[in-house]
Image (cartoon, rainbow, N blue to C red; front, side, top):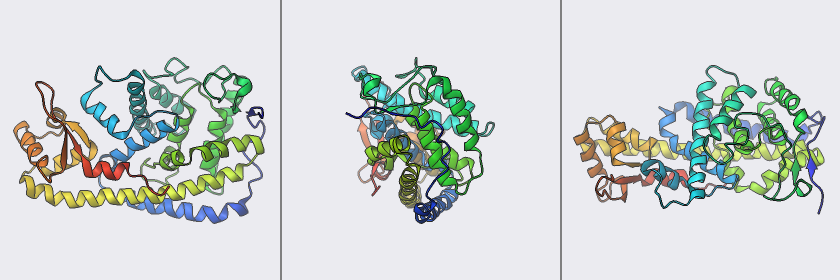
Length: 374
């Protein structure tokens, strides 16, 4: 077995990219991203309508790291709480997904006050690991010991990759932060390098992969390539997980920054197209159901109810009544109408005693969870 690959000291940022191999990918990737952003800018209240896509991104990014939770399980857990019978590892998987989403929201809010920087990343990392596996592994702090990537339980001699030494980490992260804010020939190529270098430095004891993927939409938003930090690359990366790992490893093993950048640009192009497709489907669904729900309910609160369904596609009746700001008798009547045959909602759990009924917005969940051609 070949020995571990170690961090590429002295090779960041790369000085010898083969731009001739990147040019054919740069244009299509930027064009696909621009088309998606044009649609994103036209979405009314995107944080509500695209909320399910944000949750699915959290699910898939966490799945790359080994979690098994599905989007349906995460949303049902939120709606119903944690049943006593739930297996502890599954509960932890779901809590990690929820923390990912909280971390993403926190980062978006804090970018109103802070630039994209190491300080912000540490704060987001503290949220990501709050109360879950790894919470005692230097939460919100850069590591001070050597870490490595290997099959769990294997010694460092059997590692696939050994990141930068702890005594060199602060200087490495300072170089990374400086490069993050430099003007370069192409922002997407720069983002590819930013992501690869962060993963190679592996500055935390846990959570590096998830933080590295959170950085992708934050960078695009910071550079004004997106109107909102809503880009969902994990679908592509999860579908091509082994190549993703191999391309990152080849940066340090072979100095193949160009091969990594080609992979990343292709990922951006493919996923921007898929994001655009799903966003259009969600908008079309909203427009189709807007008149339908008004006609079905004859209520002045119909659109408010529809907005709630898009933001929370699995929910319990109590939360709908409390959070939709619809008078309770009207809210109950709307739920009854929408859960009838050929209605919008599927009853996932009937009410029993003090336990409220649980509902799912089946059409929206189908769009969100569908896997594209990534």
